[in-house]
Length: 466
Image 1 (cartoon, rainbow, N blue to C red):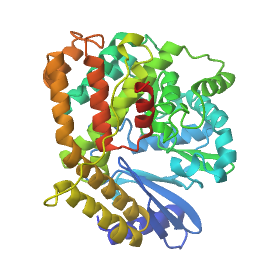
Image 2: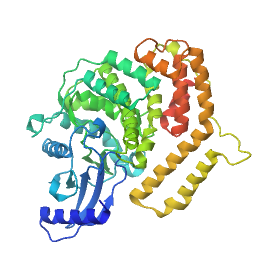
Image 3: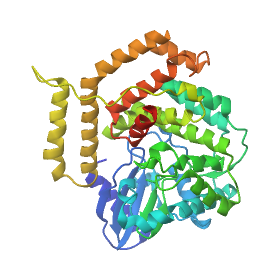
Image 4: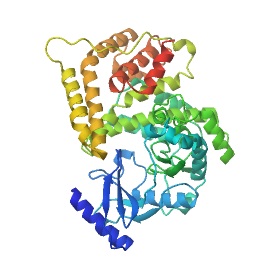
């Protein structure tokens, strides 16, 4: 659907739904939205947000989207009634509207981008409240009565969730040794939890609307289901959701202990550390599998947005995150220091290299294209710059790292596929000579190509060089 047709249909819908003789204006595609489109607009002096399924995307999207947009609207209605700070749903799209699947809700004011909130003096008051506010919102979410929903929410046990994730991983054809070991560990340590409370499923910075005075809305309910409330608590603490503030485990703004203490004050529930550890490692691996799925959706022509390919390369972040989490429970003698540092780019000489061509493209994009763009187009230009940087570093450093990995594998006595199979089947573990060093070094090498500025890389280098 072209932009003009989209705006015309939205205009007709709003006139029929809200009854005013007004005009839709200030339509803007909101930044991000790799798995869902969000559009802000004005109508009759009110601010709204349209959430809808991107064109060409199946409503389930490979299993990443747990509930339909219609059910999401029902869940948000119930959340508001249950005391959750969420925007009010004002209208639901119907097939005859020609706008696709979705709904319209009031626009919550504030900021969602974590890098504009965390550490920003303008949001200092809000950040000081986040521990308490997040604990309170999650308490209200976990106390929602699912029996009041027209359509039921799915329940899967920890083991079933893990099997579902493993199936998606295998369908993509991925072979990542660190993931294989994590799957094995999770399967052996899954709790026997039968809790069936409502869980948000994606409660994190980036999905919370924040004003300088505090939280104004909990957003993005597409992964809501029934399950263990500890999953939500651990998910907020997932390393990828700390947004540069890696050592502040809870969302980049607090320690895990302070956050869990705050939740206990509302709920009366003290979280078992081992149950929390399972869900933290599970959520970290879940994000890695989701990154793989993003790339697979692009590859299968489901949605050819550039952002999906770049997110698909974030898998190496998860490798480092998993290594740091798993080392907390591995014998200390396995976690020896590593002699490794971020490599310098090789000196250029002779003909122009492929990496230099990619660097030139990146500079042109940044200096010539990006300054004239705004909104979602500017965001896409930044994504393009990230993609060019990844490709350039791979062209320059990839062959060197590949050779080093092959040498390490030869010393261990496996090739890459054999190692993945052996880890999956429990035939080999971190105690095997040279294995844990290889897994960590491979993660460092891949991450230094994909995202050398990722905060976890700095943390890992400091820990593993001691």
